Amino acid sequence: MSDQSTSAPPQRRTFLMVLPLIAFIGLALLFWFRLGSGDPSRIPSALIGRPAPQTALPPLEGLQDNGTQVPGLDPAAFKGKVSLVNVWASWCVPCHDEAPLLTELAKDKRFQLVGINYKDASDNARRFLGRYGNPFGRVGVDANGRASIEWGVYGVPETFVVGREGTIVYKLVGPVTPDNLRTVLMPQMEKALRAAGS
Image (cartoon, rainbow, N blue to C red; front, side, top):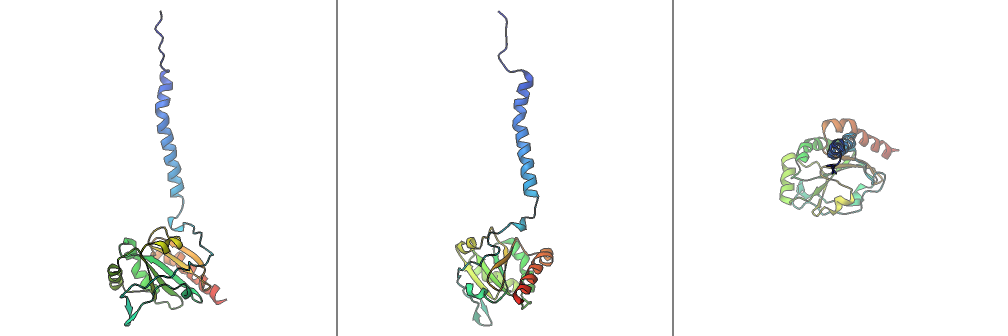
């Protein structure tokens, strides 16, 4: 009786062992090119061109400007003004980096800055604004994060340009930086201001 091996030929066994590695490398390359092929701050928003969410938010208790409580977020405040809406939190590291730029932006009185304080402790939020200065004319508290979901927020910080008619015209994902302020955000603000004037 001849001794015939029932196992697969060596070449086929080697191929079967290498096949999972080839599949893994292929998937890794696919993810690498898909994730690396774009600016993460340009995540599209389904809300562009739509009215800003009509969610009122309470004020940040104890936050005052010249002895008067800084108001919360009232959706009616968007009508008739170009607005820059910044979603921030004291625990957000990039928010600390962008705070001085927002303070500089607040000097431009052609538009209003509105803050949405996201899932933050009131004491920490007030301390944060005390440290950097409060650039916001309104600060709404989004304690449970529901309003931010309505705004389509992926994470903090995010900044929205809202036109005079109350429509979201641009969304910046991530912190305001000197570069994106100059190349993207201010051109979008200028565009909204021109549209508002016509």
